[in-house]
Image (tube, rainbow, N blue to C red):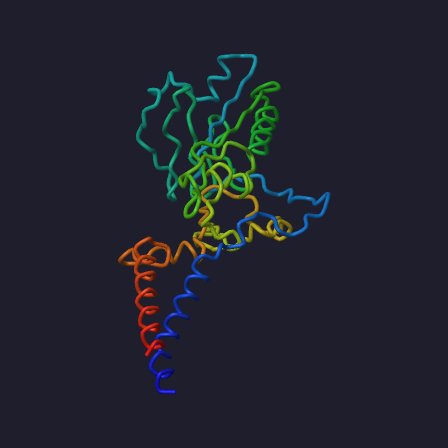
Length: 285
């Protein structure tokens, strides 16, 4: 009985390390996307088209049959040095007029905090809340309605607009949005997909709404639930953060010695060998 009491702590220690060994080698199961049963014909959200917001930068090009008339609306580089910034002109109430030109010679318009731009001839236009196609149609209608141009072609493009991909993705960084709407799945694809350490069931999207940062959680393993999220389609300035799973978190410690390092398991093997030898000595006695 006394012999059992002597080796009992050693047996408990051995059992503890065996438990660590079996749990430490466990592979996370949630590495696959869309683990739910996707209903055939599932309708995706239709309202994901990007809307113009304050501080967005826009390229607006007006083309007509009369080149002279077109240059009037396009603020061509003949009036400003191409690619250089010119002093911003305050129009009061915190409004700043557009001031720089693109390399193509067409000015870019910065939407004011009040959601407006100062467009040639037409003056101040309220543009916030419009899609780029809606703004193009609105400017075309104004030009035709005021008999300023006959059947003009108006093109509106977003400039320098993107989303940030951070955390457990293969290529973190800022990615430009080059289309009218982009889903979180497309953004993840641009970032080279999540790595195996990414926590797919708990991805965070940080979005600024009315000057306040708001966090949304999405589950990439549940496609139907994902499509119902307000962040299924991303907006300009969104930050997508992929949290590391528990295995990844355990890999990082202050001294780098953890259950996934070679040094740790060499130490464990050495200790178990010592424990086994000690137990053998007690038993033989």
